[in-house]
Each structure stands twice: as C-alpha cells, then as structure tokens.
Length: 66
Image (cartoon, rainbow, N blue to C red; front, side, top):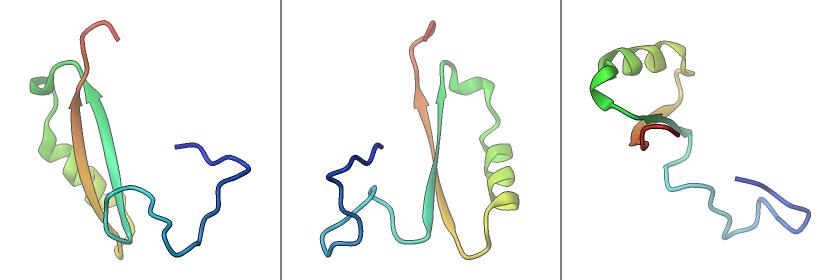
C-alpha cells in the first residue's frame, strides 16, 4: 500500500484492509506449502504479537522461480 500526497486518512469512509480493528495480517508467499510447519508460524506470531491484537495468517501460493 502506498499513500500519496492526495491521500486523506481519518475521514469517515477510510478503510485500510479487510480486517477488524487491532488485527494485522501476516502474508507468506510460498512455492511449496508442504515445506512449512503452519503451527510453528502460528506459535511464533502468538508469542510476538501484542496482547490486545488479533491476527490472520495467509499462506499464498507463488509460482516456482519467482
């Protein structure tokens, strides 16, 4: 996301992303989802995140060679 000089945050209709307040998204692009231990990723995020926040984990498929 890029904010330019004409961008106004804080207006009534401003929405950043599609998640609830105090929620962040961790996106990990993978060429092979079988090589990652998803539970370990969840454990790391839960350990490191602020207590008042929630999160969503998105593992996205990426073509090999990118």
